[in-house]
Structure formats: C-alpha cells, structure tokens
Length: 316
Image (cartoon, rainbow, N blue to C red; front, side, top):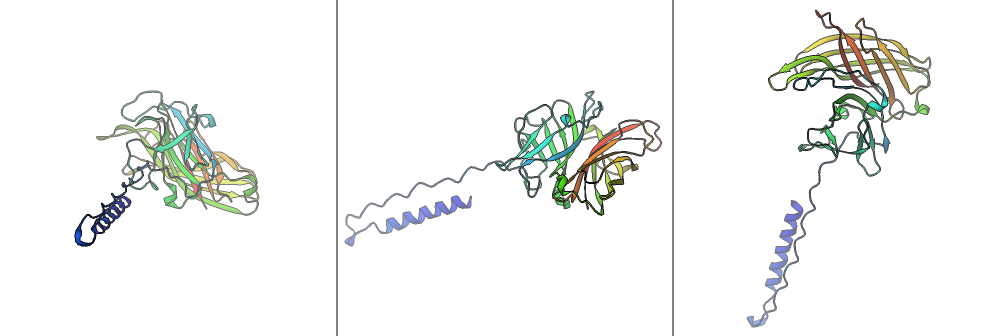
C-alpha cells in the first residue's frame, strides 16, 4: 500500500513540474506537457507461508507417531478407536524442500505442499498452527502443530492430524540426530510435554460429544555410557477446562543401548490394552527427543479399561 502511495505521489509531482514548465516567454504557444508514466501496481499479495521450525534443514524430518482408524461415525467429533498402529506406513511424514516450503505425506498418499488451512487468515504466520495438504478441501485433511518453538524447542514439534478419510493420529517430528552425534559418555535428564487423545467421551453445548484430549509431562533419564533408560509420564484428561488426573506411569521394559539413536519401552500399568512407547533423539547433539505412546488406564471409580495415545517432545 505504501509503495503504491509513493508511486502515485511521485507521478503527481512529475505532472505538476511538467505543467509549470510548459509556457514560453509572453505566454504564447507553450510546449505541451508530457503525460506521466503509468503507475506500476504493487505485486499481488500471496498466501502466508507455513512456519514450523526456526531454522529447518532441507530433507525429511525424523518422526514417530501413533494412529487409529475411526470405527464408528460417533456424534460430533467423537470417534471409537480402531486398532492402534505405530507402523511407519500408517503415520504422516513432513519434509522441508530446497525451494523453501514444507511438504506432507499422508498415509498412502504422495508428497504434496503443506499450506495454511483454507479459509484461515493468520494474524501472525510465524505462530499459526493449522495446515492442510494443498489438494485437501476446506475442513478436510489437516495437520495442527503445538508451536513448540514458543516453548524453547529448536528441533522438535508435536502434531495432530486427520487424513479426511477416517484415519487420525498424533505425531512428533524433528531434525533427527545422527548416530555419530549421540553422546558416548555421561548422562542426561530430558523433561518435556505430552499431548494426545483418549476414548473418554466428553461433551459441551458448542462441540457436542468429543474424544477428551490428554495432556501431561514426561521425564526421561539416559545414561549414555551404560546404555540405560528410566523415566515416567504423568497425564490427565483435559476437556478444555479442569483436568481429571489419569496418573503417573513409570517406564518398564525399556530398550536402549549406548550410541543408539532410538529407544522404546512400556508403562507400568495394570490396565489391559495397547501399552508402548518409542522415541528417538533430535538436534545436532541430541539436545532434544521425540516420542510416541499408547497407554491403557483406569479412571478413579471406574473399573473399565480406557485407552489413550499421543506423542511427546522433551529437552535437557
């Protein structure tokens, strides 16, 4: 807008100058003024670019995730869980191209550009978090991120996604640490944030029934030299209001060896259901880590087994 205004003012000033110089001595038969050049319009405004990492490296990000296929239509956004999967083929993948934009690969689909969600006008593209594959219709397939850079993360991000055809999941992704970059001595404690969803159905007057979100924290204690891992995850139901504690669950049956870029394990729980976690390090020196998990649990006063799944990011 300013560029156009300056152009218009410049043209007007030129026109006035030419007119003032048009008359000869005595005012007879002045020289005709030259018309001003056409105003160059400003370039068209293009859509805002997707922003996820502060300084993304070109290539595919490392990722871990858990997904499910909806087994019933439910009501509102409430869906019954189908079998959970942590298979790589059933998760989304994200990459950054040499052209300077992000691409997404939904399960069973080709790579395509990731764009700001259709119909959305972000006030600040740097902190906007709702995106879609370029070919997806409005309110179709999407990826929603946690904007982890606002919490000091440089190499890791959390995301929730749906493919528009009934599959949905939780994913953590980031700049994968190479084997040569894994610390070989000492130990470190990583503390982080947990996000996910559950089969506990909540409801309100605006959304109707929906699967209650899960939030919490995670702590991971690695001894790099000995190749050991201990830790725990604390989670609660959060239906956009007061939280309902699920509990703190210690890690068990952990699998991690010295120099490894990945790890896995289970949670100490008596509830029956999908029970696992898997993760990997992120950052050029394993400064952060990403994980995906599934947890069966009991709520206080409820003997039924419930299921939750999600992802985490953590840093030391």
